[in-house]
Length: 209
Ligand SMILES: N[C@@H](CCC(=O)N[C@@H](CS)C(=O)NCC(=O)O)C(=O)O
Image 1: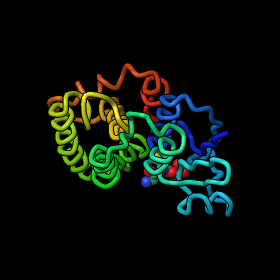
Image 2: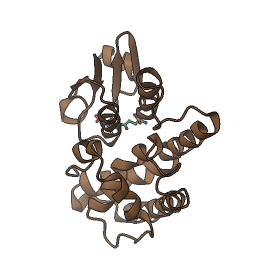
Image 3: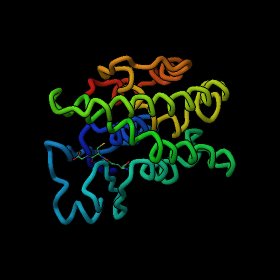
Image 4: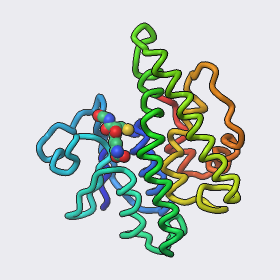
């Protein structure tokens, strides 16, 4: 059976949980990371060199990096899923947005999350948080325009892996106590299209902690 390592409060674990549910794949999840630890052992590090979560084991195969895990699950266990189209051009579009999530979106999102949720008020770098809010609003505006132009989701009228990678951060954007949160036209509509999905409701729309 698939074995997923990672605490449910991690945005990168949430993406994988949503996909596992979407694909109806049975799995075992092991709490790891944060207060659960388990990520400092040589065995864990051999699977995930920075000791982060998530990691995935599938028999002999051991993987790290959440977006690579999403791609692997589709390739290995649901090759025909429309979540990860097989036509090269359509697939490349999905992958572009997945990379954009990791390279452009995750940095300001982490600054805001760690600053507001994991740092006591008296120790917060409010200037860094405000700059990250501005930058993330810019990224969200790009995503919202893309989804609007494509008829609902980032790569077309239906959900793909691209949307799933952003979903936990989008949920946090609307549920963190962000001061003067910029109003990004079209963003709430994109969120609302993902929100009814069962995997989203179970694994993504959770308390921000
Ligand atoms: N690029 C990596 C980032 C992984 C990452 O930063 N994970 C965070 C949680 S979202 C983590 O492991 N933090 C330390 C911990 O939980 O112990 C991925 O997408 O898998």
